[in-house]
Image 1 (cartoon, helix red, strand yellow):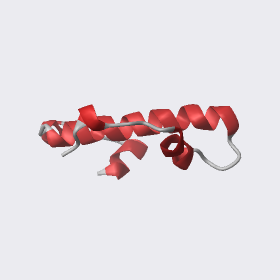
Image 2 (cartoon, rainbow, N blue to C red):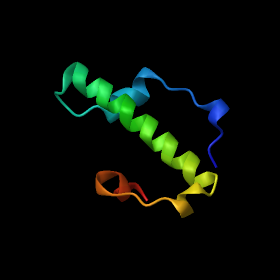
Image 3 (tube, rainbow, N blue to C red):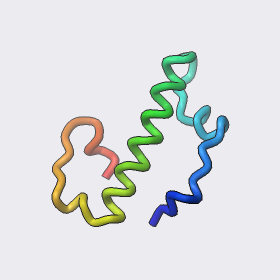
Length: 62
């Protein structure tokens, strides 16, 4: 279970999610990717994923 009050998003964490050579657009995409991971983890932890159907690239996370 993720403790959301303990999450510290650092520049290093963001940098690890940025595709090589993508520049500023890659940084924005990385932040969205991290937010999506946190949202999906929250939905899973709260039991709401049992009521959700995901489609496309998002569904490959679970």
